[in-house]
Length: 560
Image 1 (cartoon, rainbow, N blue to C red):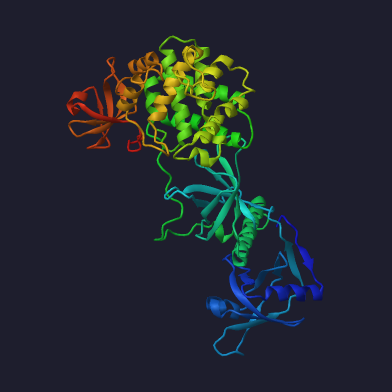
Image 2 (tube, rainbow, N blue to C red):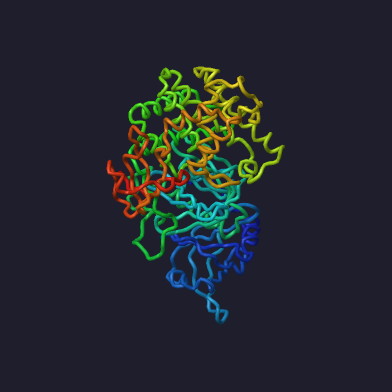
C-alpha cells in the first residue's frame, strides 16, 4: 500500500479495537489466496489474549474454506479507522446447535488506517473499470471510466459533452462501477467538482459517496487494496513472478446478465460532422473552464476559429449539414456552433475580409456561453418574470468579462455579436435596450442569425418553431427585427435550409443535405422508407415538400 498503517501491538488497544468491531455488521472476512470480495461475518466473542469466536451461519458458503484452514484476515471499522488483523486460520466449533461457529487465535497485532478520504488508489494502464451514472432525467445515463477510488469517493473520466450539465453539489441517484470480473460497486453520489483534463479532451468529475454504510466502506476498502496491489504488481514486472494478478481485473466469460454500461453510440453521421465534433469538444471544455472561474482561452479560441473557418471554406454545405448532426452535444454548444457557422457563411457571401470572418466565428462560438454561468433554476425556467428577465440579461456581461484576454478580437465585433445580438430594433431587447440607428449592420445581422437558430430549437417554455413559421414571424414583425437582413438570410439559406427534415408528398422523409442554385433540395438523405438511400438530383420523384422540421437532428442517418 502507498499509505503506511499504524501497527497496534498493545494488548489494551487491541482489546478496545476488537470490542468496537464486534458490533453487528462491523466485521468482514477476506481470504488471502483469492481476491473475492470480503463477506460479512459476526465477531461474537473475544477472549482476551486467547481466541476470537466467529459466526458464519449467514454466509455458510465459506465454511468449507475455513474448515480447510485457508488463511484469512478480518477487516472492520473502529473509532473512525479501518482495522485489519494479521493473517489468521480458524477451526470449527460445534458448541451451538444450528450455528456455524469457528475459533481462531487472538491477534497479536492490528493494522490501523486512520480514515483519510483524500487517499485514493489510482487505476493504471490495463485496469479499466466502467461506470454508469444516473441523472435526474429519466433515460439520461452517463457512461464514464473510474480513475481512482477512496473510502470517501472517486474520480471519473467522461466525455466533455456529458459533463457540462453536472454541477458542484449535485446529487446523483445512482453510481455503479463494474470491474472486469463483474464485481460491482453501487452507491448514491454527490458531485464535488467538474473540470477538464490538461489536454481539454475529457472531463474529470470528482464524486463523494453519499451516506456510506460500514459494509459499503469495507467493500470499498477491499477494492482500494486490490487496486493498489495490482498497481504494485504492474509497476514491478518480473520481480515476483509468483504473485498472481488481482481477480478484479480478470475478465470473466460472457454472462446472460446485461452489463451496466451500454454500448457506445455510433459516431456522427458524416465525416464533416465528426471533424466538427472536435470543435464542439473545445466548447464543452471551455464551458467547464468558465464554470471553474477561468477566462476564455485566447489561443484556443483563435485556433478553433481558424479550424472552423477552414471547414467552411472547404465545403460550406457539408458544414451546414454537420452543424445539425451534433445531436449528442448540449443545446448551448449546438446553438453557438450554428450561429458561428451561419454568421461567417452569410458574411462570406457578402465578400467580408477573412479577418472579419474569423472574428465572427470566434464571437459566434462564445456569444451565449455566459448562460452556463447563470443559476440552473433560471436557465431551465419555463416562464420568466421581470426580475428573471433582468437576471437572464447578465449572461452578456458575464461572457464579455471573460473575453478580456482575447486582445486579437476587434472590440466592435465583440460589441455587435455578443453585446447586441439580443437587442431589438424597437428597443425591447437586452442588455441595454438599444434601438434603431444605435444598432450597426453587423449587430442586425447577428440578431437575425441568432434568433432564427434559437426559434428553431425547443425550450423549456415552448416547442421548436418550423422554418416557415420563423420566417413568417420575423417578416411580419419589421419593427422588432431588421426585415432587410431577414430577407438576405432567407435568400442565402433558402426556404428549405440544409439540415431540415423534409416530408414529401410521396410519403418519403429525408434530410436536406445540399441545395441547387435556385435554393431547392438537390441532395436528400432519406430516413423513410429506407435509412440507406441517398437521393441526388432526381428529387422530383419524391413529390413536393409538404412540411419542414428544423428541431430534430439527423440521428437516423447511416455513417458515411
